Amino acid sequence: MILSGRIPSHVGIIMDGNGRWAELRGLPRIEGHRRGTERAKEIAGVAMELGIKCITLYAFSTENWQRPQTEVSMLMKLVEFYLKNELSALIKKGIVFKTIGETWRLPKNIQTIIKETEEKTASNDGMTLVAALSYSGTNEIIRAVKKTMNSGKRAEEITEDFFNAQLDTAGLTSPDLIIRTSGERRLSNFLLWQSAYAELFFTDTLWPDFDREEFITAIHDFQGRERRFGSISARSNAF
Ligand code: IPE
Ligand code: IPE
Ligand code: MG
Image 1 (cartoon, protein in one colour):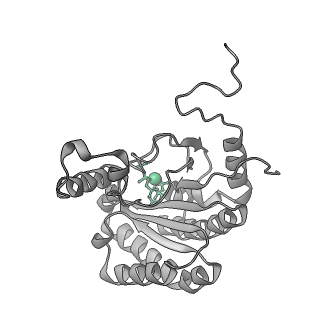
Image 2 (cartoon, helix red, strand yellow):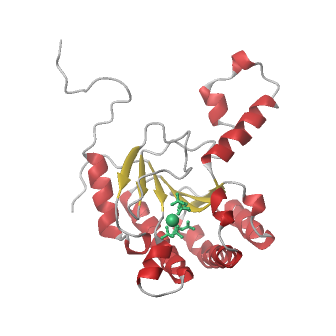
């Protein structure tokens, strides 16, 4: 498939279906997560090739802490492994790495690697790769409300720009396209405020099977959408 239209600046991905992918094959769920991590690496590479400026990967939600302790700790090991192994590659590729979410709830060693990766890649000028870790939109909004109330500003002074700057995504553009795999048609608390005008793409494919070709299909689908932002169609000649 050839892409000829506009490339979305920011793509958010809800990487869902790892557990089901493994269960369908009689494998432990963690094997699905391991394959999922490989996919995340691959898709980030394709995003960079396509000239996407920012990609946000939903890797672990605030609600995911409720999962069995064994699954949570194995997921944390995978995050640690991914970051440790990817750091030098990220620097080489010029990627800027960021995280959103309550990262202080993550194990200390992961926090250290995150801090190091963020610092070492901050001055890069390539694509921004945002990992949503221990993230939920409602939690992010509440924290932003608290920061706003502590800012000393009067209610009348609060603007959308000011509020945007209190969110974890401060400085990032809003997602143009949000992709969710695994057949679920919901946001599961992903980028709630920021997704106000995002185009949504749902696929039944489980995340470990989501490949380059399907990613390009999603971008192609996006290119066929007319984004009106509440206005009327540019093609409309009603008057
Ligand atoms: C997504 O896969 C990854 C995380 C939420 C960490 P799941 O683990 O939710 O996979 P399913 O939805 O159970 O198949
Ligand atoms: C959303 O998937 C979170 C991530 C992909 C990290 P979940 O599997 O946790 O969402 P629900 O439970 O199906 O809504
Ligand atoms: Mg799931």
